[in-house]
Image 1 (tube, rainbow, N blue to C red):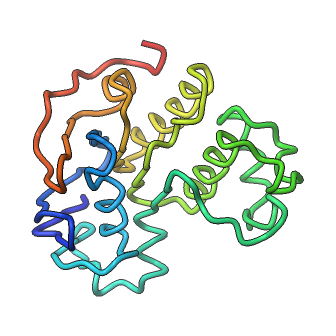
Image 2: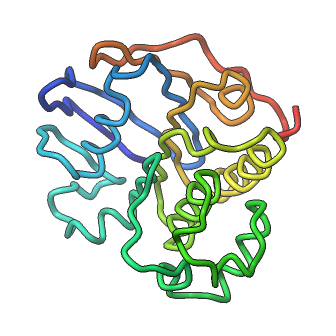
Image 3: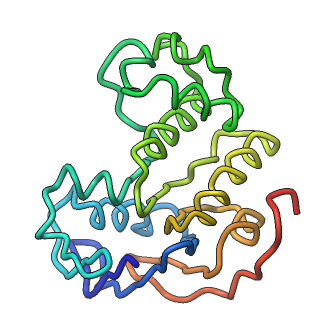
Amino acid sequence: MLTIRQLTRPGLEPVDLSIEAGECVALSGPSGAGKSMLLRAIVDLDPNEGDIRLDDAARGDIPAPRWRRLVAYVPPDSGWWADDVASHFPDGDAARRLLPRLGLPAEALVWPVARLSTGERQRLALARALLVEPRVLLLDEPTSGLDRETALKVEDVLSQRLADGVAILLVTHDPGQTRRLARRSLLMKDGKVTDAAPAPAQSGSGA
C-alpha cells in the first residue's frame, strides 16, 4: 500500500491518500489544477513536505533511485538520453515481448528516438516503467495521444498489472477509462484533491 499523509509543496494543498495493492485511483481536473505537480511530489522530483510510505517503509529511508523504481512515474513527455530506442531498455528480450501488447512492433527497439510519434513515445516510456516491475505506477495521461483501439490495448496491460497487485494513480480526462480501470475517482482543482463520484467497476477494457 502507498500511504500519503500531509503531502504539500507550493501550489499543492496538503494531500492525504492511500492506494492499496491492486487498486487504481483515477485523478481528473482542469489543466493547471496541480495533477502533474502531485505526481512529481510523490516520486520526490520536486521539493515537498509530508510523510509517504510504501507499506511500512518511509520514502526518506529509501535511496531515491530505488524509490523511483518502486514508485515509477511516467510523465506525458518522458526524457530520452540516447539517440536509439534500444539503449533505453537493458533487457531487450523482455521489451520485445511487451511491446506488441502495447500495440508496438518488436522492431521498434531499433528505431531512432527522433522518428517516434507522440503516441509511440508514450507507450515506450510506459514499457520502460513496466519493465522495472514497480510496486506503484504514477501515470500522467498515458493514452492521451492514442486512438481508442490502441488505448484499449494499453488498458489491458494495466489491468493485468492491477491483477498482479500493482497500485496505480492514473491522471486521465477520459470518463470511460476511469470506469474501466479505477476503483475510486478523485478530483483536483486549485491544488486541492477531493473525492469525485465513485467509479463503478467494469469487467474488461472493451466495455
